[in-house]
Image 1 (cartoon, rainbow, N blue to C red):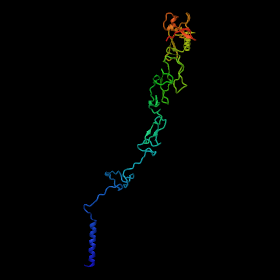
Image 2: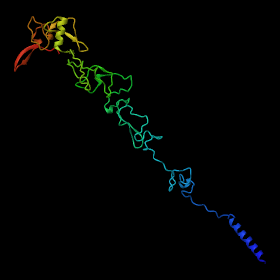
Image 3: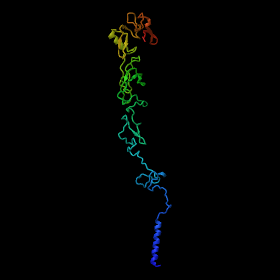
Image 4: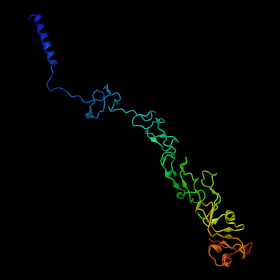
Amino acid sequence: MRLAGRLAVSAALAAGLLAAALLPSAGCLLTLPSVCGDGHVDIESGEECDPAAASEPLCDPESCTKITLEKCGNATIDPGEQCDLTEFGNKDCPSGKGFLSCTPDCKLDESTCDQCGNGRVDVEAGEECDPKAGSFMQPKDCSELTTYPTKPYTSGRMTTCTDKCLWYRGPCGFCGDNEADDPQLLDINYPDRLSKRESCDGQDVQLEDLSSYCKDVRGCPNSVCAVECLDTCDGFVAEDDARCCLPAGSDCPSPGQDPCCYAYDNSLGDLYSADACADRFENGGLKKRVCKSSL
C-alpha cells in the first residue's frame, strides 16, 4: 500500500475514535452533592440561600443561612419598633411630664414618666384624682377622705384636682363634729389657707359670740339666751321663747338674777333650784357653785 493511502486510513481511524469519545454514554451520568456556594439553593439539605446567587447578598458563606442585620440600636425607628435608643418620633409621656425610656428591645417604657396627668387615677401611686381624667369629674365629699391635716372633715365637697393629683381641700370644713373650732388648717399643701372660725357647732359655742348675739338680738346685757346653732356653724337663731340665762360655768345665780340656762333646757320648775348648779373645785380645794352644762 502506498504511503499516502496508509496516512489516509490512520486519519480516518483517529477521527472515528474522537467522535466516539464525544458521544454520550448511556447509564454513566453522576449526580454531584449540593455544596454551599455552588449558586444553587438546595432547600432539601437545609439551605436558605447561597452566596453565589446574585439575589441573596446577605447569606452566610459557610452555612448558607440568611443573615439578619440587627436594626434595634441603630437610632432609627424601624418597622416593628416603638423607639430606638433616644429616638421616640413624636411620642411623649401621656402626662406631658417626666421622660420616656426605650428598652433594649426597642419598646417604649413609661415608668420614668410622671404618672400624674396621664388621664388615669393611679391609686397605687398615691393619687386621689387626675386633672386629665375628664372634664366632667364628679365632686367628692370631703368626709370621704381618709387622710386629713389635723382631724376628719365633716363638711364640704371638693371639685378641683391639683397638679399633684390630690384633691384641693379648700372647700372642706369641720362643721358638724360638735366642736366650735377656731381657724383650722384645711390643706397641708396650702398652709396659709385656714377654715373660718366657727361660732358654734351643735351644743358647743364660742361664748363671746353667743353673748354678743344675745345682747344685740335678745337684749341680754350680761348673759346669754337659748339659741340653736345654724347648720353652717357661723351663727345662731334664737328660739321663739328664748330668755336670757347664764351659760355653763357661770357663778350660780341668786333669785332675781338671770337663771342658769340649764334650768330652761331641763324645764326645772324652780329656775333657781340647786339642781341647776354643781360644785367646782379651784385653787387647791376651794369650791364654788357654777351653772351646769346642758349637754
